[in-house]
Amino acid sequence: MTPAPIAVALDAPDLDTAARWAALVTPYVTTVKVGLELYLRYGPDVVAAVRGASGVQVFLDLKLHDIPATVRGAARAVARLRPSYLTVHAAGGPAMVRAAVEAAPGTAIAAVTVLTSLGEADLAAIGLEGPAPDAVRRLAALAVEAGARALVCSPQEAAAVRAEVGAGVTLITPGVRPAGADVQDQARVATPEQALAAGADLLVIGRPITGAPDPGAAAAGIAAALRRASAGAS
Ligand SMILES: O=C(O)c1cc(=O)[nH]c(=O)n1[C@@H]1O[C@H](COP(=O)(O)O)[C@@H](O)[C@H]1O
Image: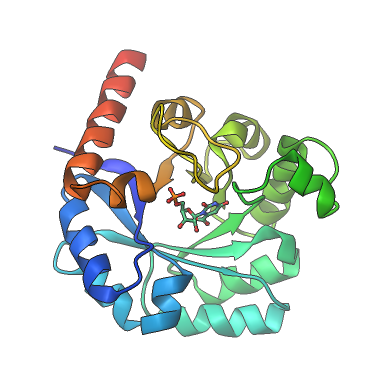
């Protein structure tokens, strides 16, 4: 069966757990995501550990955000690990996004627009006035103009972002929760089926899978639901 377009967020406190989750979910998903906790604890070794022998795509989520020269150096430092995706914050500005793009030519730079944990009140508090989709669309356009090949936004903005940037850009959506699941610290959420229907190319899903008693079965269940949704839509 073709693996589903899901990146499982391996937000584990230790390498053994992350590698175990990766092995359990890789039959069902295209991608696993290594984030700050694992990378800061274990460094580059974690990428090989979760990649294993399966050849699953690795998404390195370091959310780089600094001056262009510093981001260029950081992106160059991890480019040799050949991640499929590397995140930077679009709010770092066009020169910073471009520096990452130039430093890691074999990797799709994924620009994070507005974190899915932020609701409207948080956006106002940090000075991003206006509805979330406006800020997301503006940051998306800036990042694509600077060479980003992928964008991270919530499923709630995916359709608006697609309309803004067109078909050639990979839309990645965290903030995905199966119907009835606890939203935890996420604010702008939708179900996997809604994310797909809104035009997302890759769904980032962590705790609804890794927090399940059997992460492999949870990944298989969401993958099957997505297959049914695509079959129903075509
Ligand atoms: O860049 C990301 O992956 C990301 C961006 C964003 O706006 N929101 C967001 O939740 N993420 C990541 O997506 C994952 C979501 O995990 P769960 O909330 O457990 O499904 C976490 O690893 C976050 O770091």
